[in-house]
Image (cartoon, rainbow over all chains, first blue to last red):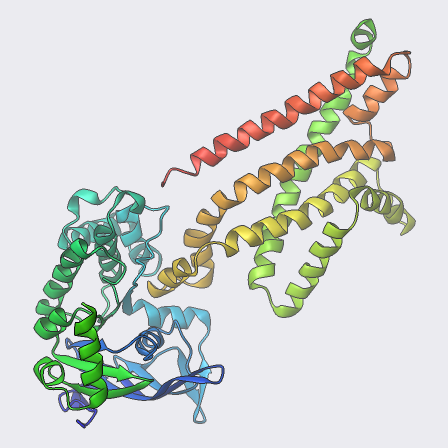
Length: 271
Length: 214
């Protein structure tokens, strides 16, 4: 089995855009979803996490944006402990305002898009910059326009989400996350809810983002081809643990554990 | 007909009282409901229990009982209270309880993903409610809110039993001078119908206005 630390990440653990997960444990009641996750991600790195459903990968992602609390371990983004402060060796949850400040620096794109249906694309994208970053309306809208242009939706700025296809909605959601200028963006199976013919346009936007190396990306996906092409590293999770990780070629091409082999096989059979 | 014409000022005063009462109760009741509903969802457990008890008591007791209770009860505590104010309070307590439940239901039915998306861009609790959750909840609130308002307009007739001269009581006062109650009650039914139907139509308009994003 390969060892679970990335040698490149160690010296950059405090840098902007780095993500460090240390011995993370989380229980849902009696069920331990995350059983000691260690993961180090360097700034600008693109990490694709694969694994069967129930492996805890979504929970891990949600912990990184503190949408989920955890019982022990640490998550440190850009050198800062997320969601908690440490006092006498114990984790104490931060007040809502400080949690929000932590979340603002980590972008998240959801499987179900979760666009605000009562706002147009541009208002969806500009809301965070206006209300969290306190940019003037004009500046925020300017930025929103730029972001929507970047995801190829310059002509949809004034459309409500209900008028957009799933692929377009997801691209607006990506623009909304990027408009906060996060150093880290989390993608939670963002193409799983899309019709097959719409998957490509969303992956194209993500590929472009990955190639710009401006942000650290943690991507949960079942798109193995995307992982192969875009990921700097692939992480395989199963039953609340990281089982294997390494370059896409190593992990996907030459899996060293039976579990990953089984997963990939099941995966190919299912296609 | 002649009797109506002869007593039109009295009847009009009654109508005015009914409208005034209804408007006040709808306004205050909605305000109480917004606060109550929000507390039911997000309040401290102790406060939540208190609001829960309030809502359950209001929903489980007849409106007429609370009207009598407040009309006789508050003066009994040594606080002088005009009948009209007692009526406003009683109906507001009733409306607020039901409104709380409507608000709780509507706000609670906004999908959790909306709150999470709002969290993910760094909005704090109050901002999440203000910009994301409430605007979507308002639309879900409108139909049950209109229903409740119509019930309140009709329920306001009960205050005639504690000597508030609303349209009900003024009409009864006039019809007692005649030997023909039936035409008066028909007239009364028509006026209340127009009020309630009109309000319902207004609600429909409101609903369409909030449907702009479909």
